[in-house]
Length: 254
Ligand SMILES: NC(=O)c1ccc[n+]([C@@H]2O[C@H](COP(=O)([O-])OP(=O)(O)OC[C@H]3O[C@@H](n4cnc5c(N)ncnc54)[C@H](OP(=O)(O)O)[C@@H]3O)[C@@H](O)[C@H]2O)c1
Image 1: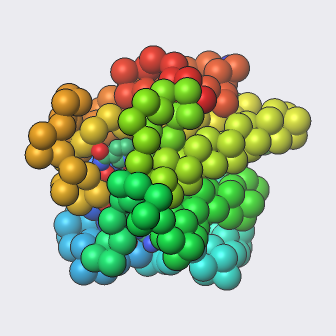
Image 2: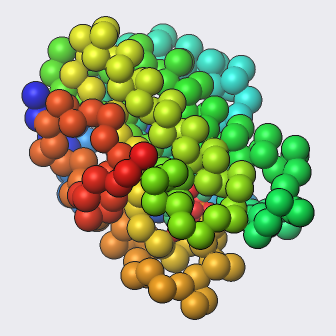
């Protein structure tokens, strides 16, 4: 089956408060005029643009303030969805953690810590499994659907020539494994679901801001990345579920 954005009735963007998630929402509002959207965010202080956008589009965009690393909050939201009989044709997870005031990507073993590994794995890997666990039930049982997650090329073991960034790299590699597992399980359950880890490309957002000054990679705006990601997903055969794809549609080595 072929997944088509134009046929989606409901799309859920996890982590839409800012960055690529918010840009995806803005792009989809224009490019998928018949779809409605559910959007999660965690940090109210960073979600003002989302909240304003939603206040003007209440009939199409519903937002939820939720900490996705807290499983009981995810479960609670899924119960609300179940009571409303909602079907979700596509999930796009844009949640990711690279740095905070206390934690910077590790340049060498000297800076690795248990806390940073736990935080990275919690946000970058485990959240996706928890979302799939509680929200798989809302995917359509017939017809194509999608479960997409923003991964990162630095999570590719085959492509790693530079080292460093221990916890981010490892947590994205773990995310890719989780998504491969989800792809296999969904196939076994006869869901026609396109499960994809996608590398969005180096994109100007809060997450990348401290590291892009002298980047050798092409630097994308969040809007460009959103369009690229949607192009990768749209019209793609669900047979390709489980591929690790780049923003330009190229396969990335595991
Ligand atoms: N930007 C790039 O160059 C680049 C490159 C490769 C991959 N990616 C991936 O693309 C995705 C989107 O990132 P972005 O560039 O758009 O960055 P961003 O603007 O910083 O967005 C990060 C998202 O993750 C959420 N988040 C961060 N820490 C969290 C935590 N502890 N608990 C729950 N949610 C948390 C944020 O929500 P709140 O602020 O509401 O907490 C926000 O929605 C991430 O998975 C990232 O790894 C980005």
